[in-house]
Image (cartoon, rainbow, N blue to C red):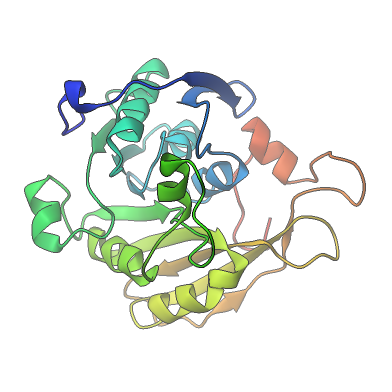
Length: 262
């Protein structure tokens, strides 16, 4: 495990540890600013079985990639994060959770050019699966905290992230993004020319409610048609309890099943 950034460049910040996957992971995150949660856990549960090489673009503190490593003992992960503070947090979380031999941290922008990525150690046409939770809130007011604003806001199209993801995946690799539901047209416009077997999994807060998030998956080299799955429902009709299978995913007992939306 390494971070391609000098440690003395990184600012110190207040941090707190959070348990994920029923205590299987202990993740240090900033006490202020963007903090990973359900989106990252679902993303980490989304790669198919049997993959060996995973790339997490915009990895933040490393939650999604670490969840994926817990789910698959044979997986190796490369975590790409452009924020120096978060890259160092990800490196610490990888080490603290015992994944130093299976994970590499690279400080690179997800929208860097191919030449820039190559110079910093991120290779193309290599990964079995590329996952990403890109910035959102493309329109509107930036969050007051600079780190939160950087994680939550993007000034351009998500297509730049998708171009990088597709470039880094191998000839039959998969790309999986989680995003706000309103970004679905952008996601599909960028996925469709580059991949087939596009699968959309809407994520709804409660039964009967409109989706607030979407998971979108595509496969390079495939000509299979698009599939729209039944929604994954996060909470039960009343109360704060999680519905199945989300409850099992949060405990670390289950992964996402893309065949039926569960």
